[in-house]
Length: 100
Image (tube, rainbow, N blue to C red; front, side):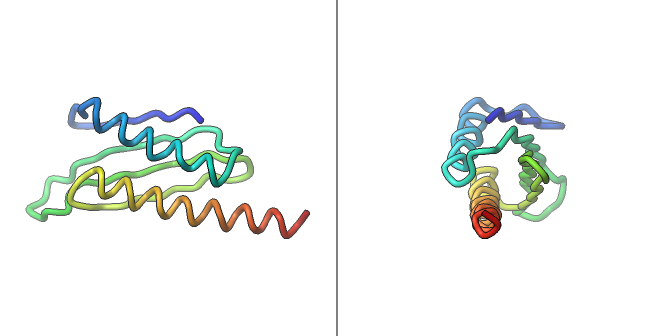
């Protein structure tokens, strides 16, 4: 799976980019037909602590999955996104097995 990370309005450190790619690569254990993942890391200019946004567009045959989470850190938001995508991919796989 090809992962492209975009960080508008700020420069992300290499450790963060590696962390995001490593987490998303684990999704291939649950669904092996993932084509690519577009990741957007954004910082919202607000007074709130939870101003880090992670959006992931996961391209799979037939559909695209889009998940957006907000948290205190990019790492927390990435973990939440991966958990949500993992659940969605497991559901999709079960539905496919039901049709076979």
